[in-house]
Image 1 (tube, helix red, strand yellow):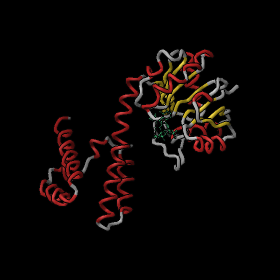
Image 2 (cartoon, protein in one colour):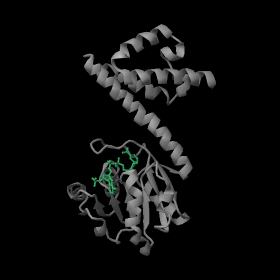
Image 3 (tube, protein in one colour):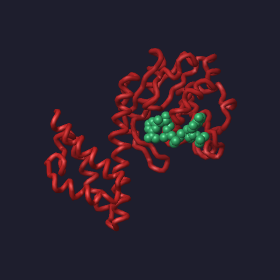
Image 4 (cartoon, protein in one colour):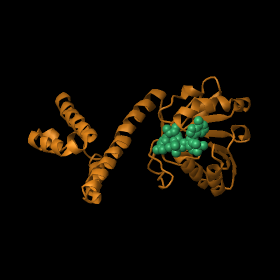
Length: 261
Ligand SMILES: NC(=O)c1ccc[n+]([C@@H]2O[C@H](COP(=O)([O-])OP(=O)(O)OC[C@H]3O[C@@H](n4cnc5c(N)ncnc54)[C@H](OP(=O)(O)O)[C@@H]3O)[C@@H](O)[C@H]2O)c1
């Protein structure tokens, strides 16, 4: 029989996991969010109960998935420690938070970390995302692995240390590149140039590294050593001093990487 699952947190990750697990046939037992309307909106979609006080989270589910802000996990673990009486499994979805955050609160705990960028408004393709799993014991790890495998094909057994590496690098490849897209969009908007003209370049950049290493795929003035072009760009960026700093730092980093490797 499928385990029943309670979801703690109705943000980006909580939202998508709730819908996917429900769609896969799991019973979502409760949805918790500190803001009741948020919990209710999500719970309604999967015909379950919503709650907004931790004391209302009951002991009837088999697995509790904590999908809240990283900084809130330790305190949530403390508040949920009553679940240990029934040996429940408690797992969090954070890439950056060690599994040891649950030490001393539960006997059966683990990690249920989907390595993808989630936004409520954007559908997620679970077929393509990797799931990183860990567990405090063999049985817990096996249960969480089975749960992940039932919603996506790429499930990895990943230690705290490995997850930390993945999270730092995920911030680089997603958060930082996305920030650069946002910066580029702002500059284009202010200079009245359509940002959409850059879309095919963004697409090709990510496509190319599936076949060529990013280092080999590097192009641009920094790797060519086109100093006059760099100077022209820096002059243009005088109007954007913060972005000028980023440009200088990244150009230097490109040159250093190619010198050192
Ligand atoms: N988004 C991603 O791309 C992504 C991908 C993989 C893993 N993760 C991880 O998944 C977790 C959730 O991320 P998210 O993107 O879903 O975040 P989010 O959309 O910002 O949602 C976080 C939720 O945490 C709740 N929250 C914040 N502080 C809390 C506290 N002290 N106690 C209880 N609830 C609290 C908020 O609830 P209220 O509405 O009640 O304020 C909010 O619903 C994080 O650990 C994150 O690292 C995120």
